[in-house]
Image 1 (cartoon, rainbow, N blue to C red):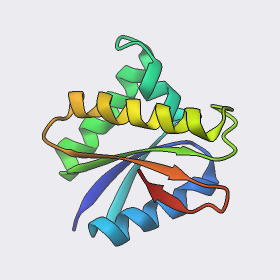
Image 2 (tube, rainbow, N blue to C red; image 1 turned 90 degrees about the vertical axis):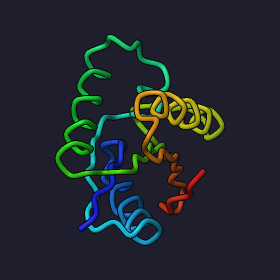
Image 3 (cartoon, rainbow, N blue to C red; image 1 turned 180 degrees about the vertical axis):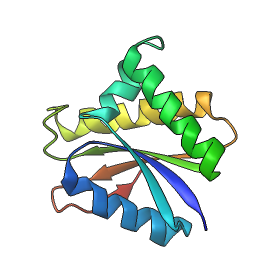
Image 4 (spheres, rainbow, N blue to C red; image 1 turned 60 degrees about the horizontal axis):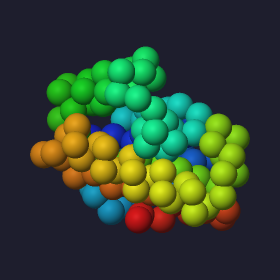
Amino acid sequence: MKFVTAINCMDGRTQVPVAEHLKAKYGATYVDTITEPGVDRIVAEEPEDSPVIEALKKKCNISIEHHNSDLIAVVGHHGCAGNPVEKEEHLEHIKKAVERLKGWYPDLTIIGIWVDEEWKANEL
């Protein structure tokens, strides 16, 4: 039994393609999913001491410590109401979020995923 973690938007259209990608590529049995609207921007830009960042870290720590998750994916997507910017800005947010997560969890695999207009998960 293998767990991985997805920090994903709350948009339900992204949940299945992200979980399917993580299961297929990384052999995950289960995907612990942590959601916030526009989460790629949140992880990329919110201050370290903001309540939303503290809550995200707490949830990640539960997944890591109790489910032995060894991978975290941070997700951005087309048509996001919580972060209504162009694709290029989403990709920058995802890349910054990946780097920030690598600082928090240097021993884990950290990846970025873009879910496109066809609702396909594309690993960056």
